[in-house]
Length: 222
Image (tube, rainbow, N blue to C red; front, side, top):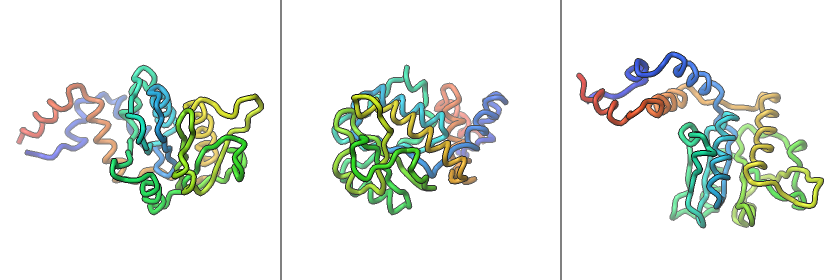
């Protein structure tokens, strides 16, 4: 058996597809990520994945202790294929999960209602090169465990009677502004060569119909 590489798969893809994959890869960030905690509406998770994909955010961290992950493909439009979902282990506490991310150098930025003390607006918040922005459950918000380990709190200013947007809307507003500011401040870190090559192979495979059978046949060839 031989090892499959992107060179083996290139003849199976159109030139425009290969160019598009390279273009998207060149703009993928690994420094700014999103964390979702116990989101129970599948269409909300799907909308967030779509937002992250469009903003060039590769990694999404999932903490689902109370609800199973359910995606709405009509909302995500296949975005789940192009982003990386990193889920908390079932035997891992939320605190341990967050501390593990912090050991990797990430700052945990929690989204909260405007009434939360010591919370900054997204306009006033100082962008970090390595940060994970956490969004909580549709009704309860983020848990005490995650809030306790957070490095900063941010909110969207509200001029109405409600103190929150829908989770997917909040994510789109906040992450769009953060990515935009990170680009302007030259604080957006991109994938390194190895990460790009690994992801390129993964995306090539996902772009090919019946890829499992195609790969099996290629691996049998001498």
